[in-house]
Length: 229
Image 1 (cartoon, rainbow, N blue to C red):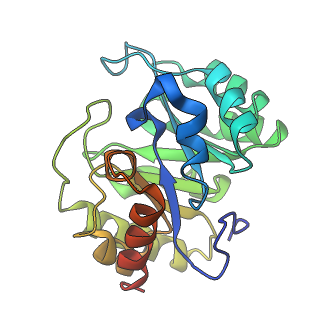
Image 2 (cartoon, rainbow, N blue to C red):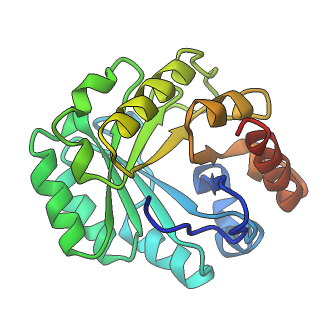
């Protein structure tokens, strides 16, 4: 399995707060406030593949200046290749791109690895795990969307748990070592079931940044997930 990157190296759980839910006027302080997490999750949207327009490589570089936590960059863009390479050059540790948006996924994974980044692939809720048959061995993480990409505040899609389990079975059957990340709708109520199914990385936005005590929110989510292992 790719290296354990978390600050709590005794825990199998990795928590990745999404700065999309942070106060952007205080981004440096907000990132400092999640120092007990394992990743900084940066969502890059282009306003085309999804309706919203968000961050770019400059925010990745700024996040790295604000914290020693590795950046987990999730691209929700129409043409991921050029932006993915820019994200890697900006210092993102993991760069995930959607298989639905990238017909040349294998080539992009190789290019990201050559840049020193961990390539990752993301799946929309309607995309089956079988779509990964040809790319799974070339990536270090698979991102399973628990909601439709590009919209905040959506309810968690329950079948995500079964999808994670299917993905974990594929990983085991083929002796692969990619991480499984769930992005969207993660909460105390479903973290245990997601962990039991095989999730390694839990993306949480408003759950963390909406809390007055971010460390306590991260700890509670970590404990809820650990209970599922």
